[in-house]
Structures are given as C-alpha cells and as structure tokens.
Image (tube, rainbow, N blue to C red; front, side):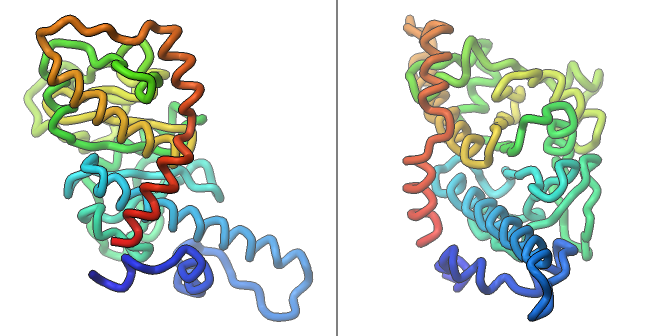
Length: 276
C-alpha cells in the first residue's frame, strides 16, 4: 500500500506546507509577522483538516462498500461557501490530499491543472446552490440502493439508525426530467438542478436505475447517512413482497435526532479506513 494510506492526521497537517497553501491560494506568513498573520495560518490549518477529513470520507465510504470506483463525496469549503471540494476523477479508495480539487458552484474548477474531473460533479454544485445548510454531498451506486430505485417501492426507514429517511425517499427519474433518453449521468447543470429539485428539503433521494444522493449538514453526517441508507436498503430488498413494519414518522424523526452525526461510527470507520 502506498505511503499516503498510513499517514497520520498530525503528520498530514504538519507536512501539508507550501503545496497545500499554494493549492488553496493562501499565503504562508513569514517568521516574525504580527499576530494577525496567525489568522492565515489558522485558515490554512482548518482547510488542511477539512481536506484530511474528505480523504478519510472517500476511504471510509469505499471501505463500507458504499462507494465503488465511480461514486464521489464532496464537502463545502469552509473558506468560501460558494465553493466546494471534490477529488479528481479516480477510485475513492486510493484518494489522497493531492487529488482534492476546488470548484465553484457552477462546478468549474478553480485550479484544474489538467486533472480529470467527475462528469457528475454538477450533482454537488447544484445541490449546494439551493441548500445553504448542506455542507456535504455523497453520490453512490450501492446495488441494494439501485434495486430499490427500480422496485416500485418507496425506501422507508426499517430501523432507528435510518430514521433520518423520514416518511420516505423521493425518486428522481432522469428520463422524465430530461424528456429524452440519456446515458443516466448527471452531466450538466440542468440535470443537476432537476435532481436538486427532486431532492427538495430531504436528506436523500433515489435515482432510478442509478443509485442515490445523500446530503448532510456536515461531512460526518453525510457519510453516516450514506452508510445507513445502504444498510436499510439491503434489509428492505430482502423483505420486498413481505409485510414490513416501518418506523412511524414521529419515531423516525426522534431516531434521526438521536443519530444526528454518527460520532462513534465516524471515529471507528476513520481509524479502520486510514490504516489500510
């Protein structure tokens, strides 16, 4: 395994240095500058920490069999709410800090440098535009979720860990949204806007024959929700055609509050994924 997979968070933050600050457009303060220069240092460290967590999120979601080689996870920039961070087009399991790119909300790269971009990056930008509270977006193709998207049944919470699904996930159908046959990919802003409209104010939406999109008010929340969407879909697929006692809406609401950010899961998943 390449060295980057076993790097510690402290080592990453202390070693990010000029390469990271150059990538983000933040000037490194010179020795002896006054206390105001510490603001720049703090901003750089905060962004470096966010990038570290985004790398961890990619690896966690791959380790939990949520992301295949084509899914992706993004996080809204803490420096500028009109920008977001997303890895270049690559397998999430081998993502490193050098692979993280910054985009505006039209999904144009701030510093592309010829790097390959996800064709479906418009999913992220268009959702961030209309959901200011959303800080992270995940798109994935877990088989159980794809099956639910074509089953004719609504994905609903079966157990408390998926209570955030609420009274059921909306279904986005690209064929209806575009009015024509497509390759099923959200490859432009118009399709991204249509998906964001289907998502509405919900934490997730199924995408017919494609997968799902999940959002969160933090990167940690979006990752946890994505894992438990997959688990809930696996259980519901197994029980299709049988009578299922789903959570009542109020049960789902209360359970969703209790499992708001999945802190225990995040710490466990992160340690496991970053050691691989």
